[in-house]
Image 1 (cartoon, rainbow, N blue to C red):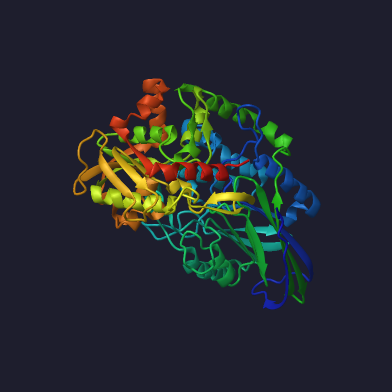
Image 2 (cartoon, rainbow, N blue to C red):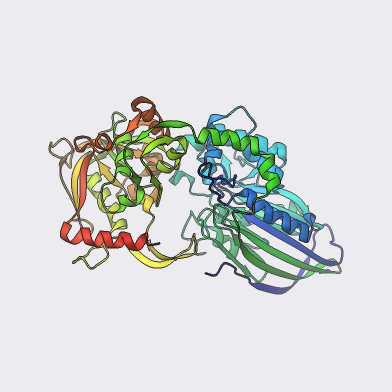
Length: 581
């Protein structure tokens, strides 16, 4: 497995400084970047003595670089998705809303220089991110998001840039949010803001900052995926910026969780991946003669992080906060009377998805429910449930919507979903699941993996249907009846429970079948809180999760892959390939 990528680019430049002159000599700037940390703040898993990669282990490496290169020569930035993904963030976002939020204190302790605003930071809602921003501003490290524009006055909601001095160089750090927010998140969490494409505006921003601030170095941190650099993907614009925008020395990105570093003639690109698995490092060397930059040299690297090398002083400094989160995490919330395994959901009905479907279909006026497995390979054992288990069962802060869909649209939706999920086969020796042997770009591990994202593998509850693996899209789905045995009418309009992510266009499944998610409000008949909160309320009311209740076919219906003599052995074999040790 290749962990490091080092590339070198040298070019001779004749750039005249417009307004201030650098002293002649050699300058070295080290840029360290993280992204998509997803609240991996503590090095503990809270239960069982487990250790995980964390900002505390990141800080060990950062301190080593600052010691070696000089703290004044090191720039530390983050490309967003900081406030979601771990119990610690949930606790300080929604439980303890009176104490100072933990995240600003962590990044102040680590001496971050700048942070971009990520889509999962937006997901927390105004009450959370506005509060966090106030505290970040006090720490001198505000969220940056130059393309998040206020609808009331046309100004950016968060600052476009921040100026810092490193290695004697004036460094401008510009920050950007993902432009595709409306495709995943309900408008109420980003009300009063619209998001402009980064690639369409960044050149103007860079030119403006260069005129205004006369920086020696320009860094752009963008919460947008690496992409292909061809301008085709609004969600992943970072290579578009890297290849096309003039005057940027470092492009630093996130969002796609895929580690990637590279250089071109006069710039470097850094994406550290996610969850503190790596830190991305870029080194820039400048030579100045007669006030002119005559050479630039770039070197980039991905540094794997050792979970066991957490900064012990940082751990002790934040131990009181850790103990609060741990106590919250270990709080008993109910009893689970069946094992929940998310991998079971890929080959048929499973207790895991049954639970989510039952939670959603019970929210009136819902008649049907659409749900997918949201954890790739999670397991929750039977027994007493603690609050931590609720994050395995439902890891995201998705709200629940109830929208209107016709029976015909439901069938088309299922055809679209299963087309991402399965192949058309003729015999048991073929792959029913759409899997391929390849390296997982996120983990850099080789093995079998799905071609498509599993959290888009939606099934429908409230009806009885089969999925024929020998047929192509358009003829795979056969709905035999409603869950209660009554006739299924394709012309009838149903109230369908669906996540806010999906209703907002996430996964493009609704748009693919002709439902305009930009105008989804025309179909919405009810809105509910986050689905994890619905799960918590269910446990408070019922005390336990029982398979015969959550899987009651008279409520959630049933579905299966057919013909079973072909599907069953093929699915079993595919599952073994996916989860081989």
